[in-house]
Image (cartoon, rainbow, N blue to C red; front, side, top):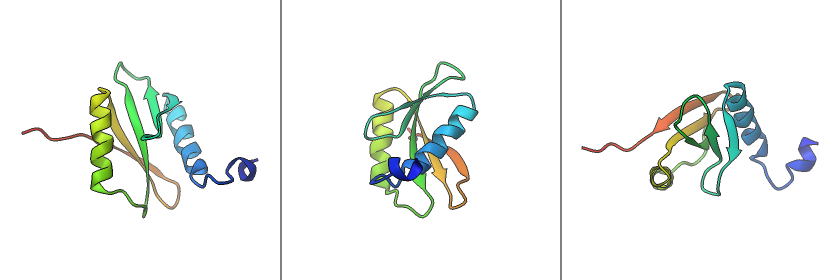
Length: 99
């Protein structure tokens, strides 16, 4: 089934792993718009946006800045889900520094 549903979508398995991890942590997970991967709710009133970054994959500062601007416009917190080669997931909060 995984092979059939993932044809043309190589990132589907990683998205599923992040989705399952977030659900196991007690979050309500919804698919987000094209810019981000997930919109999560739960554990307080704050809404969060999730963007998946692959270890060894490309994540330019320009792309991260656009994602952060989008999250701030939506008044949500941006979380990066970094997935390593062993499929371990580490979450980082990304925010801008105002001085």
